Length: 314
Image (cartoon, rainbow, N blue to C red):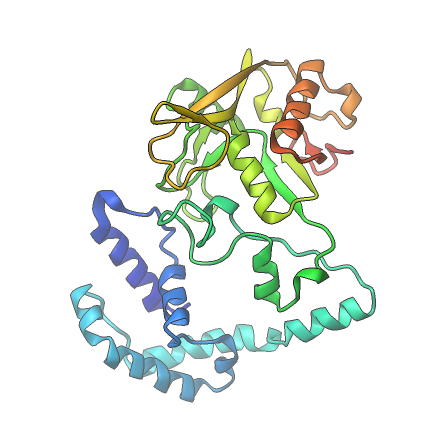
């Protein structure tokens, strides 16, 4: 991702106006567009900056009309070379054939932990298109991203909050626009890591989570931020959707016009800092057991505070 990618990203997002996707404006979308068009720039090319600079300048010429339409001022060769040299100095020492590294580690029976970015509903193929990211965010993306085969994956753990959040635009069936949503945001410190934007918050969506668990092949779920729900008199879970007068328990292709069907659970006073399941309030235990049943996935871990030691392993 080069500087002009971010300029394109931000300019296009501005042009979308009310139909803006909610992108972070970091240039990811434009860079992925070039990859699919087979015109992108790869990290390995930083080993030869002069040749890479020629390629980028040629790209500028080929897309001159686009840059002019977006009112983007492009760097000259000296500026571009300086930028690329800066990247090369920092990144080239770390370039390696990670696929071969992974294969070697697996041949030696070593364990590899792969952490995905973003969430299932932002997946380019299976998310809430077009309000998605530009890559595969599901577990299958680990295979294509690292260069391993599906049989190499021994376990998939789904990471999910005890409630729902979303950054940017796009459908969000359980979003709460009342003081409840604001309270979730405040207690959960829900502000975007990249942009600082306040996250949209709402109740747990078991329908979406069941879909995510199935498509990722989750062996278990790790429930994060259970303590954020502390102090609520009642807590709701979306168990189905109403679409055009019909109640469904699966994710439809279009989430824009769905109404969530909720099941209400009694709240609890405090789970913060609890490290054993049996020490959780009974109502919290019932809530978690309901999530297991509704998502058809067992829970393997529960987090009860920002402290990593405040974790329940099941």
